[in-house]
Image: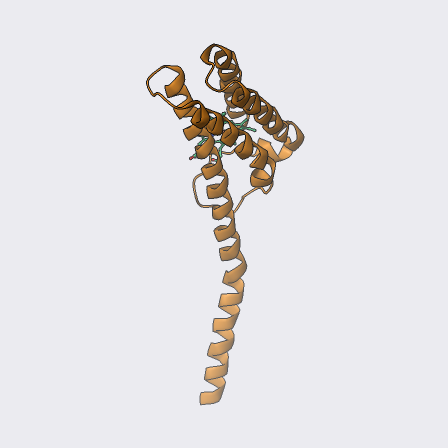
Length: 153
Ligand code: HEC
């Protein structure tokens, strides 16, 4: 009898943990994916914010730093398709990514090479504010276009 109870308990515990495992694993890995793409975007946002400060003359940065900030945006943009590839239905971490990203994948993913190209153009003229101005303007538009279509409020 004792043995039977032990076995029954063990089976119940095992059954529970096996049933609980996949859900937990999906939630954990989906949360990590959401955070990865948010960190990538926040990096782009930080670089863009510093460049904006530089353009307004509020921060004085060496040309080399401006160049690296622009290149950093290009590198981050190049990770976009890989970072956003998987939809994250089990995430409990708050996300503003719209489900349209995955139903409209080609159009969504196509924004990243455009941003990358634009950021490399910016890096080429780093330090020349009059040449940087229009490219920064285009960059802001590229961010906004994608956010308007693929972010929930
Ligand atoms: C290809 C589309 C796309 C482009 C281009 C894009 N973003 Fe995003 N961005 C997103 C999506 C989608 C999210 C929401 C991610 C989430 O919440 O899971 C986001 C989130 C963000 C966030 C919030 C990150 C956080 O911590 O939650 C910032 C900041 C940001 N983007 C800045 C920018 C800037 C600046 C640019 C342009 C230089 C840009 N993005 C270009 C799609 C894009």
